[in-house]
Image (cartoon, rainbow, N blue to C red; front, side, top):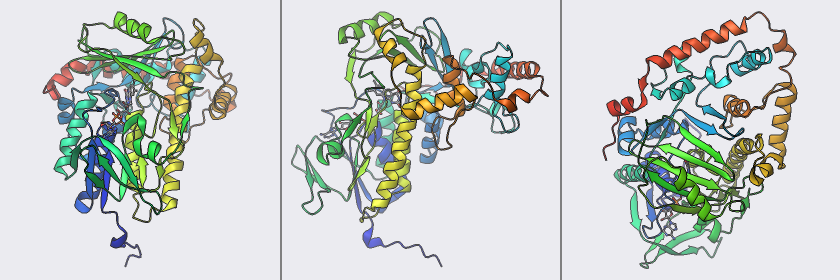
Length: 507
Ligand SMILES: Cc1cc2nc3c(=O)[nH]c(=O)nc-3n(C[C@H](O)[C@H](O)[C@H](O)COP(=O)(O)OP(=O)(O)OC[C@H]3O[C@@H](n4cnc5c(N)ncnc54)[C@H](O)[C@@H]3O)c2cc1C
């Protein structure tokens, strides 16, 4: 007999999710899937306030989120104007007129106990000329506007890559709304004008809508966006700013018609005070200019965007202010913040929807009962903070590791002090050729190697063991891997054709 206790009297009976952006509906869909009808879930959103209206590029773990929900990929892509994302291309980041890709998945194959990039570094030190990215299948496919799914045979070279999606975030929220409502989630339309807290312990008891209706719940998920209505404004959990290292605090976004082939990757094009995104959806392009208000005015940012987009505009420019940083706690009393209410790390590596996903899955794993165990809260807060910090370092790397000094903005980035954790990681890599990345980090060794080598950061030596490994004819081995990968990409389907055949947008 099991000793595991389940004291039903202590179970949470009701959850209220405040906000119906991507965070709100992703939370509603997963909680309704995992908790079933055992708990009443209510989601409150306000059309009058609306959502942030951006957030269209993702990273591979999103596949897993949809899979857990039981969502069919084809249906998802065709409902959400979705396309495939194999990589991010960084233009003008290392220096002007230079570009490299951060492709998804791993580089080639590991040799013995060492991963491929180390052998590539050795070959490079001996004069080998191909870039590391040329040993990624995702790079081969992306550069040729092709796509095929990774092989399910782990021995096959064709299994060594991964992919994510670009999609219309509004349509994704609608898609998940239908899913959640089928699972019993109750949606309430209305603006929250007051949050009522308990006289006993100051936890949240209910929210009051403009109509006067009170929505009570045992547990609240704050998905109210940047204003953090519950965790920030009501429970006074502070926001820690990361502005010192991540300067960008504004964006302007606009949609345009397609003028060229649908690329299976996001483009990130650096300019003198930030960067621009190009996110290709099936029927339109999402464009945005992310910039630092200290170095660029709003009018200039809009003009730069409109002057450089490729097709006719389909929407008016949408100006957005944002802050990079995170809450001092993500879970306090009977409230967890998920989405922009929890923190934001600027959109460079498309990590926000992922942080929503991982916050939700962590909440599912640590779901409390009415006692709101401080141990569960502590675990949630510590592991979420670690996750944010590691991603922060990865993003700062893109700004710090630049050769650009053509503007005040880039000179600041190049010369700024960086967190000790990032400093020591770069020093170890540069001095000893070893990259230290922990298992639980979102970005793995190959992700770090993609950006480090793409931005011309190399170690001074490859280390004595690797230097002594001379049994392989590296040039021949690497060339043979490259040619196999190139062959695989040649036979793959064009990205546009793949979508047209498998998941055309339903409109
Ligand atoms: C410029 C920019 C680009 C981005 N690009 C990407 C990207 O490419 N990939 C990625 O993963 N992420 C991206 N993000 C982040 C992404 O947009 C967000 O993480 C995501 O949209 C989740 O937002 P949210 O649901 O937390 O907030 P929101 O979309 O702001 O939703 C907040 C919700 O709360 C409701 N609400 C607020 N106050 C009240 C109230 N008083 N009463 C009732 N309801 C209320 C609103 O109506 C809304 O429904 C980007 C962000 C920015 C700023």
